[in-house]
Amino acid sequence: MSSGFALDRPLPDAGFGGRVRTIGATGAAELVAAGEREPAALPRLLAESGGLLLIQGLEAMADEPQLLVRLSRLFGPEVENYRQTLMPFNQVHESVPEILLVSNAPPVGRDPPKPPEPPLTADGLLPTQFPQRRGWHTDQSYRRPPPDISLFLAVNPVLKGQGQTLFADGTAAYEALPPALKTRIEGLEGLHVGLRAGRSRDEILAGNRPRDLLPHERPQRQPVVRVHPVTGQRALYLCEYGQMDWLDGPFVGMQPGPHGDGAALLVELMTHLTRRAFVYVHDWTVGDLLVWDNRCLVHTATWFDAATQTRTMWRTTVSGNPGALYRGERKSWIAA
Ligand SMILES: O=C(O)CCC(=O)C(=O)O
Ligand SMILES: [Fe+2]
Image 1: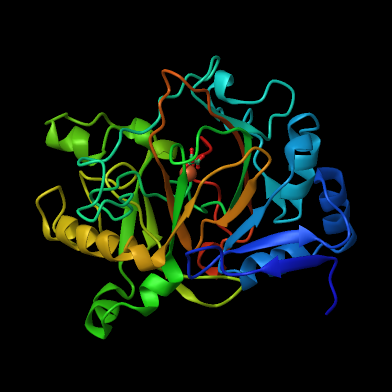
Image 2: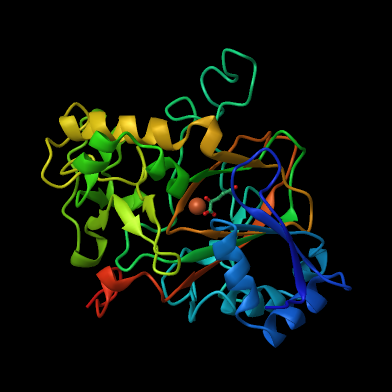
């Protein structure tokens, strides 16, 4: 099928992802208009690229934020309204409630992640692999049904080599697992929970007695091997220290807690998933936009010097096609 877009894949130094351009045009308004003329094209390119699309030169979106919302709508039926989902007021764009602000500047004031310890690998490279690299997650996996896709626009990125976003390919990582491990995790479920529930590994190790959770805050089961509803491919679907439940999990039916069999399996799977061969490192340029598929990729951010730099990124989240497993479920995170 002909398309108004050109795709270069994979992304540099990666085994997945693709960069998309509008043929014969540049700019944000032109890209969104081309996408709307052919609504199946960009979602198809996302699937063909293994779940990660880079679009560059979209600086104009920062002055016309509705363009980001229109682009997001092409990737699924529901674009999250962060005011309705009760995100802290200061983290939501003042006039466009579909835009989440990820920024160290006021009024958001979110600190960057800590640098890894040690800061470089033994061969002097940027650490990507868990557990040296921390923070790997898939967005909002503490919800059932979880969201499908996130869009992330660099409104004001920082110097190259800092404030990067790293992605790991859950599909390739699953395929590369030893057959015995594939068998072991087939049908296994992870227990995912939000950061504010007090059940992160650090909090459990610190001996915190977790508070009772309201029904809409409770940990949610998710398949460790997730079948992608569009491509039919299997992918590893899990998070690590922050977004799994370290009290009753990380896995259903395995020994719980930071010292249990579940913890050992999680470390083994996460270490495998974030091997350099499965990772793409994105250094941001103003006007870059990444579209990522949370159903088959995990991601994390790197440190930047927040004392001297401001980093402001805009995110939208798209849902509505989580797969047959979730069919007919009510939204777990909305209080009844
Ligand atoms: O700041 C980043 O690079 C990533 C932030 C993130 O994980 C997100 O907004 O989902
Ligand atoms: Fe994220």
